[in-house]
Length: 252
Image (cartoon, rainbow, N blue to C red; front, side, top):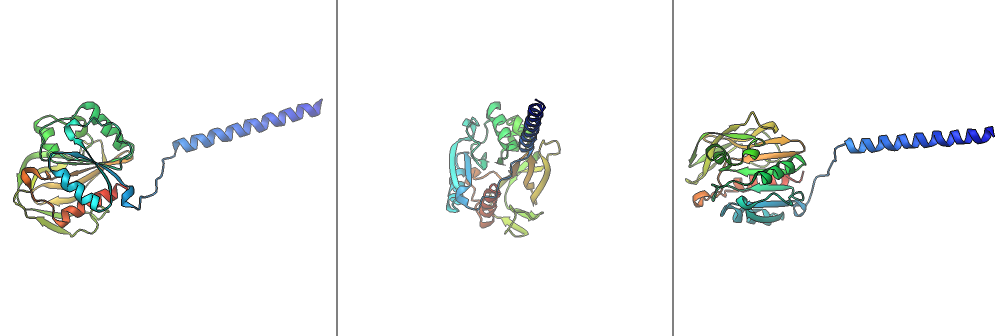
């Protein structure tokens, strides 16, 4: 009889120990961030381009020639923010047909997309529209920059401020000489929900020409230029290189 009792105790002890180990193992896995290996093939990097009515054609051409998996979606102002979790990068163009907002629900979905590890690239005239038309108020809170009161066009000189994958292979300074190169004046947005705000390139006239921040697992990047606004010829080798670098960065 005593032997039976001892066996039952051993079985109960073993059961409790196994249950405890399984519990703590599960907790450890749930609390550990998912570490993804960098994507080495451009064809495995999925990019969604939201149209502004002009700039998307060249963006698609530049990126598809590099082998990226590029989808040109609807006009940005028709975007509902659904079915975006599978994309590494969303390029939110806003230069040509710019004076429109998107729904709060779409903006919330984009914010969640970034928090969950996605990368959002925005362009002008987004900060301009935030300031003057009260648009994009939910996206405003996660952008790395804010509008500083003016906008202009003409030759602009970029100056590299940091070395990172987005600035890799680009000269320390270069100019975009098209007289219609359009941009706002922006500075880092100190009230942004994004952390580690960094200016990658400064512009002699545009301020924070290319800047980024981190929101949870994802990143926000703002490029202070208005695409092909007023039929700008913006696509110098350096401008193309920035776009390609951002796309590659989204797979890292």
